[in-house]
Length: 566
Image (cartoon, rainbow, N blue to C red; front, side, top):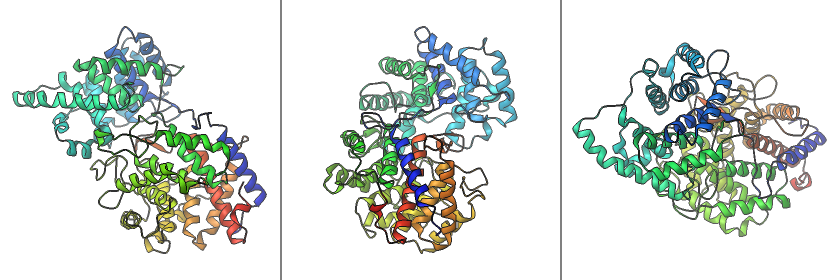
């Protein structure tokens, strides 16, 4: 390995760490500026128009005006500001404008319909649930030619908790919203009406359980898009007016100054977990500025079960103590807590580790929300499984611990034919492949043929400039380059040394004047259809790569790692 000059590396790490720390709030949370969302804004204006047409007229007017301004010259919309036109966002935006402001938006609707047809329409949407959603909104707007056939949602699934959790998982609330909308869209026979009389109260009880769990805020996972779908369903069905009123209030509080709504949920815990692991790798574990963030982690560990998804207490959500507990954020937070100097005496860390072990699938993998789920966007996920394995290892579980061994064994069977791995919640396939290589190498499988193939895939997909993209020739990103560097470093493969050096050199050159790095839309919101950037994750992944590179170079030079750490 031809090391990057130490002075340049140290300077980049220090400047990058300070840039990241400038994003920290006094309460320890690392903040971000999420992009505005066409999807969230379109759904919200449609829902507010249906549920509160008089009281929320100002929000609807501002939101529809914003949507018209975001329409591209080709007639389409991207999912978030800055994204190219795509089918889902265009379909939802056209439907929302037709529902709420057909006169003022006539030209925009016509251009959007033309663009939607040119892109192949909703038949091109690969996710069946998202395809149905687009069809349903278009049907409600009277755009039946664009909608095509509309299938009925089996609301009766809510009568069978285990089946509902495994097949709907985190989509339970928007599924109920969509099913309630169908009451006046599709005819029902006598038998169907009888089953709906049983299913509808059960569905409303589930929504109320979520509402109560979140402190009756009306946030519904603190994400405008699913909150809007639930509100639209309640308004169309005339159900649960107290919940509908609370959702309207939350959406009013969540609106941006420009009249739009954010692309994603509140990700306070997501950002903060990544920020701390990045800063710890950069040598900041003992920095007093990270203490408030640990206090934030301690205060937000889930004290109660989330019965809707049958998740016990002990994990973390992506937002706050009232949020929905998830494996991905919990694993990252556990790795963060394990990196603090006095981690051995941290009872929150111990409890969280026990929770994570208990969330392992019977097959050895980890899913995002529900154990042994059958929902493709929940699990099993190689990247989430790798994060869980790394978290357990960071917390002191040895290679032969049953949960670690079972996770590794599953990962060794989960590679794609070309040796790469998938990542449900980040852009395929560099991120997934890199984190799997890192996890398997850490727990004793660096020389396994499966890992060697994955390492070769990473080496072969490096771009000529030294960066990595998703592996298909797309331009490189800071995030994917950082993940690839980490994976190759962990593998210890001497043949990857030059690739690592070139990747680190690219990261140093990509840093901005303030020490930070530019974010790319690599985070999945709707897999294959909508991605968004997360600047904190970008900074953290770059820092972690540079910090681990510095530690590796120092170790090979016979220098104690602490001597090069802050």
